[in-house]
Length: 82
Image (cartoon, rainbow, N blue to C red):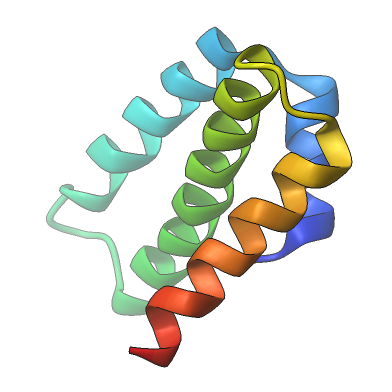
């Protein structure tokens, strides 16, 4: 997870675009010939896309972009600490 990447995705793509990309990446990971390294890279991209989708949701619920990004980062860091 990289907050600058999530911010860029949030600012430059719609939720519909992010969801479509997410579907493609998930399908890609299920192909037989995909290496472990490729799955790891796609997994990182999926994480960032899911983060951008969550930030989109928080902003549409009334949060300020900066606060939504910080809240998402704290949420992820809190789940890692467990």
